[in-house]
Structure formats: C-alpha cells, structure tokens
Image 1 (cartoon, helix red, strand yellow):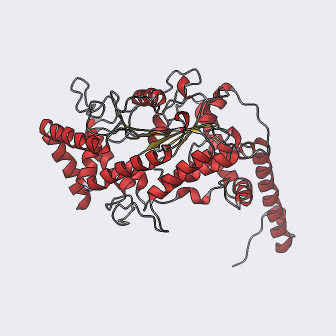
Image 2 (cartoon, rainbow, N blue to C red):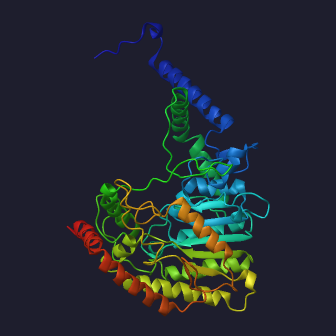
Length: 440
C-alpha cells in the first residue's frame, strides 16, 4: 500500500519529514518542560531550595500541613515540604493527625511563632515514623516533638512506603533529590501537571467546589470544613476497609491479600519496639521536648481488635511502650521526660455509642470507629500539653502510662469492656459479623 503524503509534504523525502516532525515534537516538549521549570507549578524547585518564594499567610499555613510548596499533602509532599519549612516543632502520627489535628492551637506554636509541622501520614508505620524523625532532624534539629501512636503502626508486616523518597539522612539523599526533580521536569509529570493546572483553572472559572480530603482550619483558626462523621448505614463498609488496610490480617477486595498474622517482628530482624526505642534515642540526642499519646478510638475499634484475636498483643503493646518510656525517662530532668498518655479503652471518651437524636449519625466525638474528630483532637492537645512529670498519673480522659500502674490500668479496661458488652450486646455481635464477612 502506498503512503499518501500531505500536499505540503509532497516532494519531501520520508527521512526529512520524519526528522522535521521529530524536531517539532522535541521543541514543543522542551517548551512544556521550560514552562514547568519557570512556573514550578508542583513547587518542587521551591521546596528543595532552587527557587525563592514569598509565601502568603495562607501558604504558610498550608506549609505547616505539608501542602506547600508541594501541594499534594501526601508522603512525598511531606518529605519535600519539610526541606523548605525546616520545622522545629513536629507532630507525628497517622491519618488522625493528618486529617483531624488542629495545628492552629496556640499550645502547639513553635518557639519562633510558626505553627508546628503536621507530619501525619495515612497508614503510617512506626518504622516510617522513625524515618520521618531522622529526616527532619537532619534538616533542622527539633525543639519539640509529639507522637500519636496507634496499635496498627506496630505490625512489622506493614509496608515501608517512605523508602523511595529523598530522605535527608540517606547517603544518596542528594542523588534522590535530583531524581525527584528529573521526574517532575523531564519525565511524564510535566504533562500531568499542566493538565491538572488547566483542570483547576476551569473548576475555578465555573465555580465548582473541589472536595478536600484533609479537614483543616483557616490561618485565622476558623474551621474550613466540618468533620465528616460517618453515617450509620456506611459504618460496616468503613470498618471493613480499615480492617483490611490497617491490620492487613484478612483478605479483602483491595487486593492486599493475606500477608500473615499480625506480628511485632520486622522482616529484616528486630521488632517494631526496637524502632520505637530508636525514635526515643533520636529525641534524646537532640534534647527535644517530647510528648507521646495513644490515640483514642471509639469502643467499636477495640471490639474489632478483640474480634481479630489481637487483644493479647494489644496488651503486650501497652506494656512494651510503658517500659520503653520509663527507661527513657530514667535520670532525665523533668522538662526532658516523656509522658505517655493513653486515651484508649472503653471509658467515657471512647463510648460514643448511638446518638439517637441525630438522624443516621452514629458518633459525635469520632468520625468513625477509628478516627477521632477535630474537637476531640483539641481535647487531646490540651491534656497532652498540660501533662508533665509532676502531674497526676490519671486524668479525666487518660492514664499516663509513664507513671501509672499498667496492670491495674489494663484490668480496668477489661472491666469497662464487660460493662460495655452488657449494655450493647448487639454492637459486639455486629462487629463479630463484620469480621466473619471478611473471612468468607
């Protein structure tokens, strides 16, 4: 079959035509790359110090959330933006911190007046938390650190999603930063960036509100979004999703498979408690103030842990954390000791069961079984920041495991659970049915 050349190209040899079109395509792509470098829409050059920026108050607020100069707020953005923000006060945690922690709280202000850096990562493991701390310590030694710990973080089989990013403490950190720039400049990212920019401009032009997955307050401290409390009709589906993603012990429709039972042991050797102790050692080496607390969950979450057969491991987790923090505190001055506030269990804060006067709403202090609301987060901040080595071991909604009788605390949790099960046998049965449905 003969190739029919366009009229303008008749008389031009195929080789010259191919060379010309290749040249034009290269010029167009070079212009796109140049536009990306000049405008830096992804903020990568600014984040890594290759372009100066003059941020607004709103942008400074977003920077404290890991959403400026790189705007996504995901793991890569948090790593890159911390290079630019150079925080001296950092809050570490999972999606509870990422979504519901109010960094506008005056109690959390950095010594220089800036907001603390929200280093919350959805589904974070304790290994990732250790790596995040090593990263920010290499950039700028912190003066204050807060850690929101959760049981699922200590599953040694959780993936290490931070390993691929340009963490500052790695020997090849400079090479990784250059590779990140290459990805955003000469890879596929420029085309995606410009397409997303055009989409954003179109949305703004026709006034379509975009959904935000992170509950935030404005720079002035006013809430920018209300907490999305899960509806009763969706709770079972949300529970199934969180069980599959957090505990990784059961097959699911997400394709996570069954990587084996929950274990504190790491594949490369050692345990997740070793990682936690190394994290404390890093804090000690930098003489930073440290506050540690265990997330409150709605009582349904603790029933999930029981129904999965993980309650003995949960108690081990409590004991090991208390032991590690007490060892850390030995011989240290009061200002440098760590508190370990446990907001968990079946107490008044956690038993947020069945709000009857709100249609189709299950909880008020929790967004779902696992996540607390922003208002509950503010109560946590107040309690954590007021606690020190001279404070009582037991508060209104917490127990300080750094000084309390751990076994007496666990016995009380068991008694509270028995009382809850007697009040709500239908809830206990419902959680069991959710677990059974995942085993089918």
